[in-house]
Amino acid sequence: MRAMSWAKIAALGGMLALTLAGCGPQPETATLRKPGALISSASLFHPQRFAGEWHVVESGIPGCSGTQNWTWDGKSAYHLRGTNCAITPAAVDETVTLTGPGGRLLAKDAFGGEPIWVLWVDFDYRVAVLGTPSGRWGMILSRQTPPRPDLIKAARDVMDFNGYEMTRVGK
Image 1 (tube, rainbow, N blue to C red):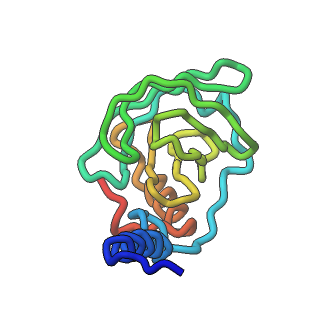
Image 2 (image 1 turned 180 degrees about the vertical axis):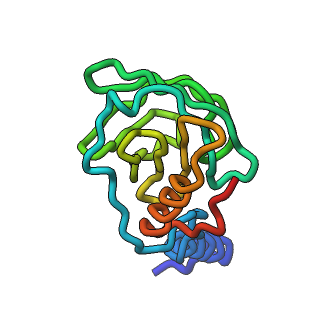
Image 3 (image 1 turned 30 degrees about the vertical axis):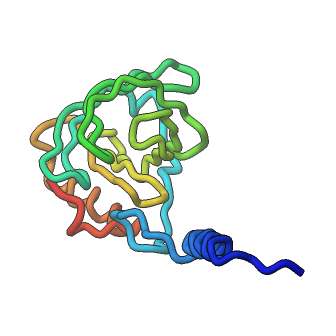
């Protein structure tokens, strides 16, 4: 049996160390939700009633504000234009597809490409709460500015119920 050179042993040791490093705990992505918290979407969601202009009231990005215009195509998607206050403040102009019941949506790029869930909307569609199962982002939208304080309190209660750490979601 041939003996290995020290250089080969060192190279194999380095490869083994790199391989094992990938097996260790990975850094967690920052989220606005408590790990393991349950989340639900709005069961009585009506796509046509959700369409229109919304103002970003609160999100996980301090100071991010603006409007979002959700234009319903009458079938299965919205054309979304406006301000994306999910991951980083940015403009958005994209198709958002309805993927399931209860206001479950998906965009290719907007909102970090993550599922968009309508967590709650009040009966008259004046205030809505959007979030994602990963908890990476969440936001409160309102049709009017300033929004009604009682509806914002209800929206914040819904976010809290769905595991959002409300000290991290703000204006």
